[in-house]
Structures are given as structure tokens and as C-alpha cells.
Image (cartoon, rainbow, N blue to C red; front, side, top):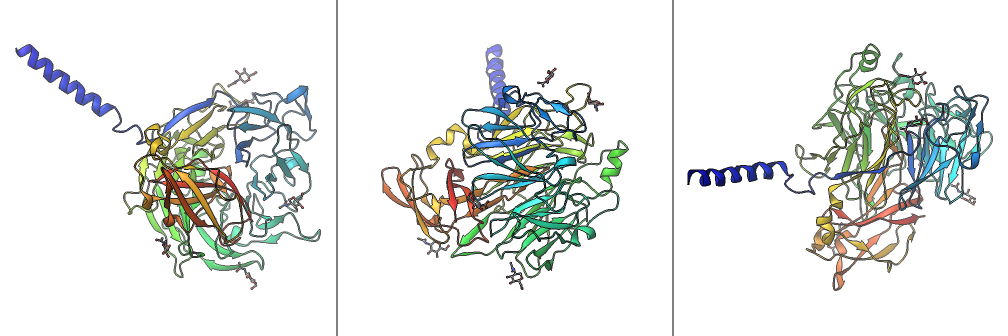
Length: 547
Ligand SMILES: *[C@@H]1O[C@H](CO)[C@@H](O)[C@H](O)[C@H]1NC(C)=O
Ligand SMILES: *[C@@H]1O[C@H](CO)[C@@H](O)[C@H](O)[C@H]1NC(C)=O
Ligand SMILES: *[C@@H]1O[C@H](CO)[C@@H](O)[C@H](O)[C@H]1NC(C)=O
Ligand SMILES: *[C@@H]1O[C@H](CO)[C@@H](O)[C@H](O)[C@H]1NC(C)=O
Ligand SMILES: *[C@@H]1O[C@H](CO)[C@@H](O)[C@H](O)[C@H]1NC(C)=O
């Protein structure tokens, strides 16, 4: 009797313990999948292309990688500082649907460069180091395509510069090491010169630049928001004029490389042709002095603060928030349901070779519309540290592909704290949990068109099988960004006007009429991924072209 009640009690206790250990709902924190055990290179830069392939590249002067060039090809570069004759690849193309890679050939050095997808499906990559610092390279994807190089496409050397697509389709290239200026690509005239940008001098620390890879966003009024070190300006690049100066982020700590925090332009909600609140969120980084300390083996704790600012306000001010964990070298990505994912990085030290410590394996989701204090949610961890030179990009099915991490020079796999990382992983946010599949919308091919024109209306048909809540539907468009060094250039998410017009048109069939983006300032021409979101669960994306 005593024994049996003891046993019941024991089982109850065990049950409670088990209940406690099993996450309350498998959907709560997303999950990780190892996609490929090696892609042969460290993924320092990544860009998703409109054929669902990701072009990935490292630097070229790094000694042999772990993947050979195809068909016995070799690269001879007399300027290469490590290997003049190199038969390994430093760039690959990853095909999302077949989960496979193909090696590509880049000639000159693309180390710490920038880029943007142009409106013609090509990645236009900018600069690099050494013999590649004035080069522009174009990658147009197809089964056999490879990189094309223009060795002197730039006026100034561009190493650690930021690129952004402009409303006229060109890209602006801002800064770079010892470059306090900007230029455009393509040029409109051979006489075009680089123009000075004193803000990059003002935000430059003498020993530690702290303003490299500035965070740049296109404001919907056509000006550029440029954040460097610990503050920002609004800039009219056509006439080289600062039109607004934003206050310093409280605390004054640096947020750009090598203090590498990250930043996003929060989702732009379009209502009757306008976006009323334009907000930027800057998170993490390392405190002042951390770079010098890291050089001496002292690894300061990363910043756990985020600053959020309404850049369109007449008197803008930073509102500070606290992340569940400090983070340096994190990446901030806009998810299709208009939440922000903070992923990768560490919790002490800085960017730079051997300067980071304590990987943060857990991504965090930030819900911009929740009240302050309940915006962050910790997600399930990976088991792979993603330190300096790691990357993350969103793909069409809603997953986030994560690669890279090579926090030391050359391809060292042994006797180093964080070995060179060749594994490619995917983080599936909780909205991809199979238990939600009934509620996941599916865009139907009957959609009226995928070539969008500014301000026109488009009818989107979709299905939802279960627990339909028409009031929760909205439609988003995400621009595919160029990711490197904790920043996603050209990242932009639009919430289209008309999400509230959803109607039933048949059994499990619905229709929503949305207005295509109203202008080039709100959506520069090019490719975007369109998603229908229902109860915060996005459909698979559909490639659309605007303009
Ligand atoms: C990289 O290549 C080297 C030389 O071929 C090999 O010894 C090493 O195991 C490879 N490492 C990885 C992680 O693939
Ligand atoms: C796109 O391609 C066309 C035709 O090849 C070319 O005329 C145009 O300049 C390209 N546009 C951009 C933005 O590169
Ligand atoms: C920049 O200034 C010029 C000259 O005043 C003006 O025509 C243009 O509209 C301005 N650009 C923006 C985006 O406001
Ligand atoms: C990495 O490997 C290179 C080449 O083998 C070597 O010169 C270098 O010292 C190594 N670095 C570290 C941090 O072990
Ligand atoms: C949808 O919302 C807009 C404002 O964003 C409003 O003007 C319109 O009346 C609403 N339409 C419906 C069908 O509720």
C-alpha cells in the first residue's frame, strides 16, 4: 500500500519533471538544422538572388580554402599575398532548393566588401582589399555563370564601406577604411568624383575607427539616414548636405565595426500612400575602449542595450531597451511577419581576429509592436559558435540561412579557440513549426501579376485551411539584403496597404487587394519577396518585381 502510493507519487513527480523539461510547446523557440557539413569556404558575405540561390564569398588572399575550383581551373594572381597560384575557390553559389553548392571563381580580393542586388537580377559587388579595392564585380546567376570583374570601377578604394540602392537604381557607396567620402555606381559621367562626407571624420576615433560599415537606410523622404559610431545624420546625397543631426545614443558607446552592433529599419507600414512612422533600431556592440582592451587580452562584456528612434520625428530621441543578453557581431534580420531576429555573435570582446569571446548561441526575437519590456523572446540555441565573419540571410520559405565564422587569419581548423567554420545551418523560426501548418497561408498562382507598378492595386488569392482569423491578415514585401559584418545592406520590409480587405471567395479560399508600393523612395525598383501573413505565420514568399 505504502509502496504503491509512493509509486504513484513517484510517477507524478517524474511526470511533472518531464513536463518541466519538455518545452511547453515545440513552436516556442524555433529550431536549427545542419544543411551542409561543409561549403568549403567561410561565408563572410551572402546575398540571396531571385532564383533562390545564395551567392557566398570569403576573401581570396587567405590561402587554400576547402573546395577546389571546377574543371581543374586555377587562379594566378601575382598580387595575392598568400598564394599566387591557387586552385581553390573563395566563392560558391548555394542552391536553396537542392541544398547543394557550386564553386565560383573570383580573381581579385573581395575581403570586407559591400554590394547590392540591382534591378536586373545581378549582384553588383563593390571593392575589397589590395588588388581588389577599386574593383566592381557583377554576378548574374545561372547554371554556369561566374563573376565578371571591372578592375577600376571605383574612384576610391572601398574596404569596409556600406552600399545602398537609391531610388534611381544606382548604388551609393559610403566610406570604407580611411575614406571619408562617398561615390555612386554606375557612374553617370566619366568625370564624376567622390564627394567628401565630414561626418565620417567627426565620428572617427583616432586609434579605433568605430565607424566602419556605417548603418545606412533610405528614408521614405528620399534622404539617407547614416549612422556611424554612436550617432546619425539625415543626408541629402544629391547636394551633399546634412539635413538633420540626430542626438547621440545615450551612453555614447560605439555601435559600428569593430564595436559591431547591428541595426534595422523597422517595418514600413504604408497607409494611403504614406509611411507615417519611420523607425530605426540599433542593438548591441561593445563599450568604448573594448577594442584596445581585447588587444591586451581583456574581453569587455558586450552592450545589452538597443536604441530605437523615430527618424521622421521633428524632435527625434532615442528610446533605450535592454536585450536579454549582451551581443557583439550579431545580425539583425527582418522576418516576413514583421518581427526582428537577432542572431549570431558573442557576448564579449569585439570584432577582429581573435578579439571575440563567449558565443551567444541563442537567437532573440524582437516584436516591435509589443509594449516595451515584453518585446524580446529568447529562441532555441544552435551548437555552432558564429563569431567574426559569420552571416545570416532570410530565404523564400521563411528560414534563415546561417554560415561563416573565421575569427582568425587563414583556414585554421586546429589549435585555435573558434576553428574556421565551414558548416551551413538553417534557423527555422517558430512560425515554421509543423503544428501551425493548417493556419499557414498559401499564395495561389492565380495572383493577378508579379510585375508590380508603383501605386497599382493587385489581387492576391490565398488559402488557409484552419482557424481562420481574417482580421489578422497582412501582406509584406521584403528586399533581399547583402549581409556581411553584422549588417544587412538594403534590408527593408514594407507592410502593404489593404491587408484589412481580406474576403472569403470559396471554401478555404481568400482574396486580399493590396496597393503596390507607392514610390521609389519607399521601394527602390527591383526584386522583393511577397508574403501573406496570417496570425503572424507567413506564407512561402513569392518573388515580385517592382518598377
Ligand atoms: C580542409 O582541408 C584540409 C586539407 O585538405 C583537411 O585536412 C581538413 O580536414 C579540411 N577541413 C574541413 C573542416 O573540411
Ligand atoms: C539592366 O540591364 C539593361 C540591359 O542589359 C541595361 O541597359 C541597364 O543599364 C541595366 N540596369 C542596371 C541598373 O544595371
Ligand atoms: C536634395 O536637395 C535638392 C536641392 O534642394 C532637392 O531638389 C532634392 O529634392 C533634395 N532631396 C531630397 C531627397 O529631399
Ligand atoms: C593559422 O594558419 C596559418 C597558416 O598555417 C599560420 O601561419 C597561423 O599562425 C595560424 N594562426 C593561428 C592563430 O594559429
Ligand atoms: C482598411 O484600413 C484603412 C486605413 O488603413 C481604412 O481607410 C479602410 O477603410 C479599411 N478598410 C476596411 C475594409 O476596413
